[in-house]
Image 1 (cartoon, rainbow, N blue to C red):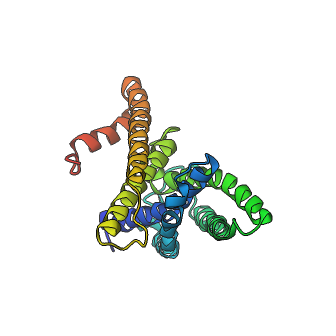
Image 2 (tube, rainbow, N blue to C red):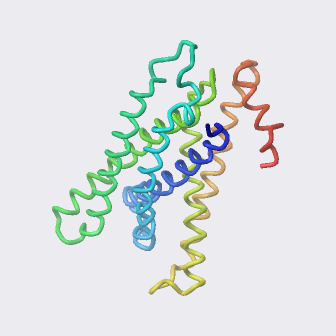
Length: 245
């Protein structure tokens, strides 16, 4: 039997691959919706991360097959909420990832042909408007299923927001590093302009500040209300084996 700690590495891998594959499409959609002039410099390399989507799907199936190794509450004798039901979880996660994949795939296809006709542009704008809503809903579900519910008695209405902000910041950091490495190895036909790094850095700063706000919004409620079940998680983060991070 594989220990939960060892199997959890696969869960972390899934979350990293999943969010890298989806966040790039979400960024391209947001830049289009706000009519950012620099979206044309970044949109194609941003959605290129979606190539990780098949790997994310495979990892999801492996984790669901793992059952109790992935989700500690499986087989528990404690009374669980209806949300913590393995068949229901498998259905909603597979269906959710499939629907998001179809939507994001349509966005990438329409982005490529959007300038060919007014009809294509209209369809592209419609799909782009749906992507951010789908992204928030799906990532919220993932944060509940693969993080929050893994720790018994931990409930936070703010956690999904904190999770979305966190993984968005992670994606931006990876994107900046990739742009820099490709630029330094002369892999671009047309190198990215310097202002691109400035704009991405501003977004990273904004997401970092927002992450701090959302984290301490949870922390203050847990600490001052002295929720014993939830303060344990804070102590583990502060004094546990990964406290140095």
